[in-house]
Length: 150
Ligand SMILES: [Fe+2]
Ligand SMILES: [Fe+2]
Image (cartoon, rainbow, N blue to C red; front, side):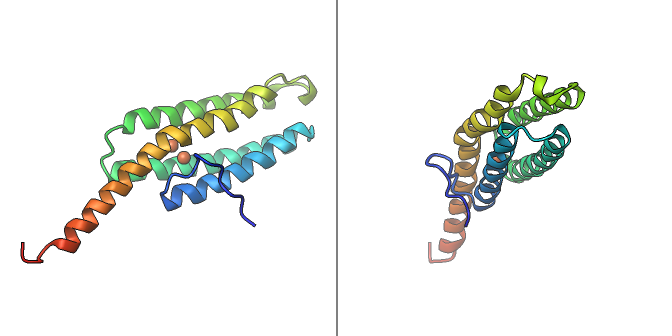
């Protein structure tokens, strides 16, 4: 059964919500794996998988923004880029640490994934979804009522 999205995380845009739901499941699994002190190689592999999913998801949002000439594209994309850069930095810390037990970034990485990503959905992603949904509704209404004797 799919995870129910927490209150405040539903954007109302289908593909974003499906991808966010998947990401939240992956993040939960990943954070449990870190807490359970899995081996370094397993953590790096899971990070690569998560990284690919995040990149595909963010690319999808950026394509939607470009398609709809979203006015806050630069600000939204800058948050994506900062997130990816921070994630990559944690990944390289883990890859280069001698022993995973000595790595001190666990809380910071979990906070990036759960708090920073959650805040991004609640602000930037919801704002984007609202913009696209309003445009779609306006376009529908224009098409629906065109030619009705106006
Ligand atoms: Fe986003
Ligand atoms: Fe998103």
